[in-house]
Length: 469
Image 1 (tube, rainbow, N blue to C red):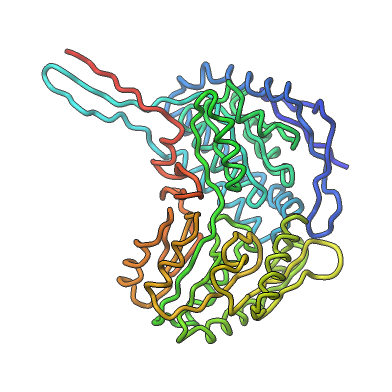
Image 2: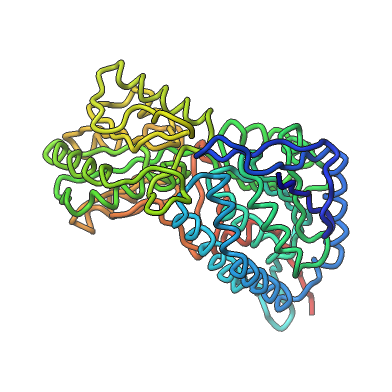
């Protein structure tokens, strides 16, 4: 059985806390053994990052760009291995894992080309005032289990592009890909620039409270984000929190079900629904409700469920047993309250955490499946008759990550999209993230943004230089 190592100061490091199993969600068998770091080893990783920061903060713009391009090339050179690891520890089909690796390569190249210009506020005969963006120091990255490579890239690359160093802590459910990514980074990066510590016994909380870490970037649940915020208060860490969502989509009566069904299904069930910005509740006008339900069921029927490494598989398992149990519980609650299960609706027999794509009709607000984030392969479909009412219901949630409007009238859909209370609103699409477009939530979905120029600035502080000539 393969044993992975921590990566501290450019060196593979044996764990002081032993190892724990990482399971394949398609087979429930052990993939590999993950190291359990100690708090002392977290301190070592932070110290290594601090040591590297002493010089890296003064690295040139060209040096940082080159390093990110070199890292992207190394990720691409290891693409086959990385995709294999993703499937084995996360469960998604191979084609989707390959897309994740390809996205990581493209995102790293794109981040390399972001700029950090000096803003000139005044340049007169007597005075020049400049605004510089300065790095923060050590950044702590805490990532979830749904996109283990991609989200690690989203955290790490802008941090080092802006002159910071990193300590990464991936989910204990899917740590292997991030460990391998950090090993790859260390093939071309200076020692201590990016370190990885793993473990589920106090490592995450230790990072949030660590005085040597100046910023935490976290993707995950709202309750965990609240805990991180409390822990970060003692030394006023900077935070970027991309937290839970319950994204609403509104289908207007002029939409053609035959045209929009595929897009709605793919963005709701992306990664088996285990995506923060996936479409999670769908409001459909009464005039096209039954037709759209039927078209969505047709798309669901085409999915091939199985082990992501098997040929032809399009739909993998839920990543872990706890999430499987939550999804099952929410569907059973909806069923008990009179919902109509169009397709799916119960876990598959045999090994693995398999749950088929499930469409649930005749539900409404107040049902747990509508009000709570299911984060799995289930879509509740809610009937409405008045568009104003649908907007109000879509906005009634205490979270606000994304939302969408589906229509043949682009102008009308765009106007409605602008009224949704969320960080990103799509028209005739959902869940599309772009390296040049800021992404983040409002309300209980967190604060701060990632991606693009605005996302890069989240890893910096502003320093004004006021020059009297």
